[in-house]
Image (cartoon, rainbow, N blue to C red):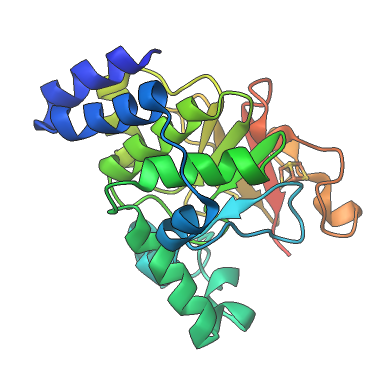
Length: 240
Ligand code: SF4
């Protein structure tokens, strides 16, 4: 999928042709050198979850659209969300997460984030260790960052099935280095049928698909990269 593909569709979908054309043209053809400080002023910083083998980018879990509803549902995968407790609750952490959420609206977000991923990621990148997709516009910008960082494998887990469906209806596919996994809402639920790549959480039942091995290896991924792999249709995480 080339940049032209994006640009034409942007115009077709929401009349934002010029703004997105600007992002792509600006970043890919002019390649204006962005300084680290400028990039940090826009996106703050990347995160690094102890479990993950790569940098992450996070937003506040309290702003998750579907997750905020699911958190109230016992037996859902968001009930007792880890990103709504512990260190995540410190005001300084919340402020940082909010700034990262707001950064998506910055006119140079794609440029700044591409710069940061290029600088700090070596092979892999994870979106939303905390937080989730907020809109199709957010997903479009993430896809552009992926296009600008073709040597990095991106994984995006989400509960926002409608945003993913809407995106795919328009663009048909994601950039080849972006794997979006849509998560089932309930513990021990079935993988969602309408998507190529999914995830589930198992507790009473056996794992469906690839059983995440992190619980056997000190809660770390180590050499496993199943979440990024197109050979793995469903990854199942064990409920702690
Ligand atoms: S399945 Fe593998 S890559 Fe995914 S979270 Fe578990 S250990 Fe990490």
